[in-house]
Length: 61
Image 1 (cartoon, rainbow, N blue to C red):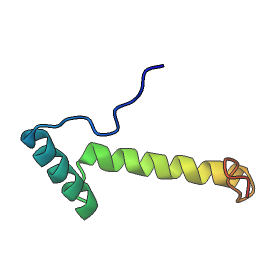
Image 2 (image 1 turned 180 degrees about the horizontal axis):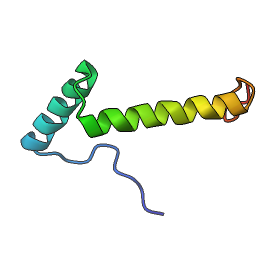
Image 3 (image 1 turned 90 degrees about the vertical axis):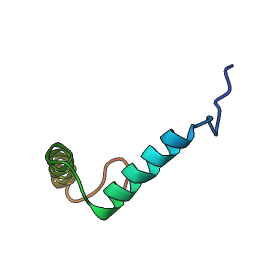
Image 4 (image 1 turned 180 degrees about the vertical axis):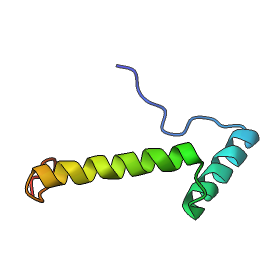
């Protein structure tokens, strides 16, 4: 079995890009395409909940 590496080595540039991307997303600064994908995902989730009588079928409540 191949064990996964929990902490893959990252260069300083990769760490910098990761932190910048996380900061951007936490501020809510999304590109138009990202914003559209978020809206589609929320609509999809709401449709699933509506079809299951207000209950989340995955969690079982």
